[in-house]
Length: 278
Ligand code: GLN
Image (cartoon, helix red, strand yellow):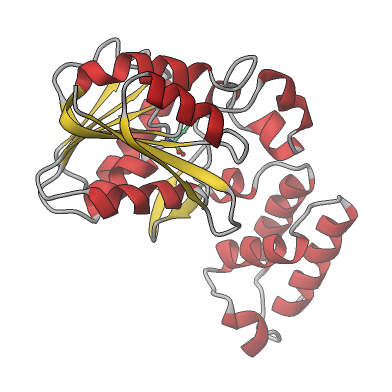
């Protein structure tokens, strides 16, 4: 098969398997095997695909047809223009989470000290450190397997001034920070079974499950967080589209000031932040 025929074959296989973005995923998998880019399909559709590449493509496609997430097959996900390694032990970085990073960047000053709670792949913390000057940070996660992925990402991206610690939220954290940021698990336990197969069966439940009402981690982070914030420090959290009011109330009750909810590009509540004056 030539390049375009491979693509057409793959697209059909994924469509038949009910994969949501069949066209996109067929193209991306072909590109990942042939080391090509978007334009190749249009400009070089008649290019030869070697037997080895064809076999590798078929292998990746058939895995995707079994609803294994694309990123678990390619091993990477782009976030804030940087490439992050991912596997089944970390949440795959979401584009929505870039809103959180951008919101923190608006308030960040040089030399800030940042604590990232539930760091997962490290995508939030490492992006912030990559795009700022002289900031340092600590990333914590309960899962040693997630921390192993974060360590690899830190080394690959050449991020400096960061410490990764295994900790149940703040348990092993010391010192005070200018910012505490987190994209905690926030899906209500009962909703997990409604998620698409890719997420439900392949992403770590501990990175998704926010307890009975989805708010368990916000309560804990907002209760314990102030002890780890400098005076005037900021708390920036990602939230679910329907959690703005509930988390605002928790945040105000915990004593945070200037609490604001920000929307994502779909106009849905996505980030909340407030400041601590103690
Ligand atoms: N901080 C990571 C992310 O946003 C992981 C979040 C999590 O595990 N809930 O992708």
